[in-house]
Image (tube, rainbow, N blue to C red; front, side):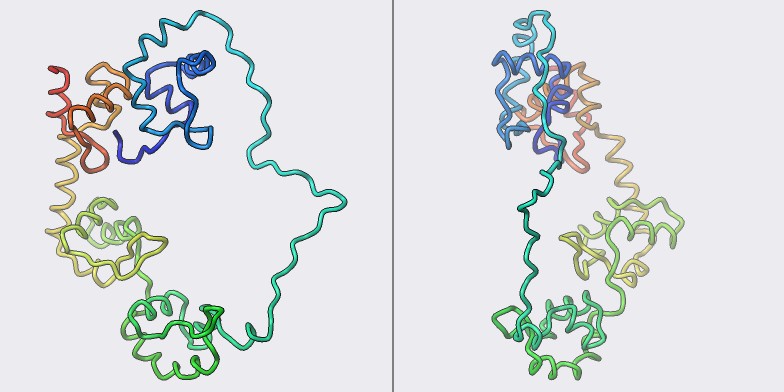
Length: 277
């Protein structure tokens, strides 16, 4: 199974099984396909993988018939118009205690830092955690911090860092090589890059570290990517090679203990061995 696939909508499930969406709908209406098990809208992979072995029987049981009209549904995201008795949400109260404390934005401004610099400083223990029940800094604590600003700036720098995609663009511009984000990720896996922070869970890399990469290391990462792509197949490519629907390939591969590698791709030699089985 592709590493990025966790569930299926009707269009994706039909394609995965190698049937038309109308056939899937008719089979579902006749009880030949179980209803979605995720929010009544999507099928989990655990449920979907029970279906490829039944596709031939499902198609045989379907008689030519017009697809039943779907009941009207509300447009996605539609909301009821506000009634006469509707009330706007009450604004959050801002008490005296809140005015006497500082949140991350206010503390950053007070210290002359950017919010990411304050966050990095907190992660490194250079700024104490908030000391009030509201998870904010008291003015008394904030007034003890300006003397630490120079130390904070020396530790966290003046640039938040680049995500793997922007990092790849930066290295490509510097080296003239065709660098992709996967190459940056591989360099990090090899210990040649160390994240200096993160943004929404994604690692960030310092520009100085990117500039210090040896061109030979970057070239090796690119070569490894090309070599694996040449020696591997996506789920769709593997299914096409075997003449199977994608769903049949992924379920058969899982049963055979075949797991995808980088980029969710399968080794070509392993895929070819499935046809013999």
